[in-house]
Image 1 (cartoon, protein in one colour):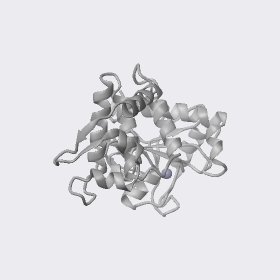
Image 2: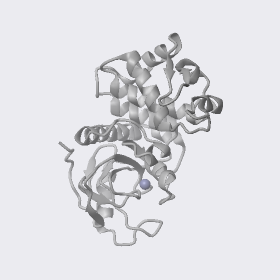
Image 3: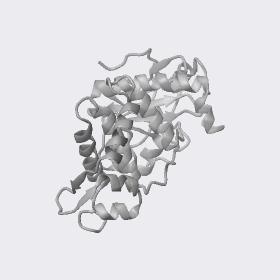
Length: 284
Ligand SMILES: [Zn+2]
């Protein structure tokens, strides 16, 4: 069953959306982070006339979350104007001013809001069978299903210049960790430890699909640079996609860990794939 928080209907909505493939996290700018902000945001969307956002387009969103409450503004199977291309996505607004130090996300109000948002996103993933993984721009254009943010949607399809909520990779990792926390008997952190053990204490020789190339997963994790990526490329020209690479890593992790770890392992495999392709420069 989809979640059913209190509902304030947004004025500007599109037609029906049949499929739901991704959940898009936003930061609102206005109003700020306080109890009651999600209700105030609902009144804003209810009263909004066209054109309405900073890029002169219509604006609405499916859900809004503040530290104390969650509201729905557009039903899940109706298109909302939050991050084009909008069809197939559900937008979740976090009531954050989008200004000030990054450390604001660590204060009590933001932490409560993140837990509340993670609970909503977990329910949405279960309702629509969406993988609890973070999607980067390459994953989005490859047709991946999962969780992402407005900035990545903009980078993937170039139809919006918004960069909210402005999270670093450690912030998006943290959010996925919250979503996964109650999903299985095995926590994300336990799975991460087990994955690390598998990667560092054992050497897995893997064959790249469709080629004669084999590689050691341990080496690939430790050597997170462009050379490693070239080494994996099936035809030597960098033609191995992020998705192919991720599949190899995911299979290795699944083989190494076994049943019960699938959700957490999938999220970690996505992260590993991204680090290798991204040159390992995006996180300390
Ligand atoms: Zn946004």
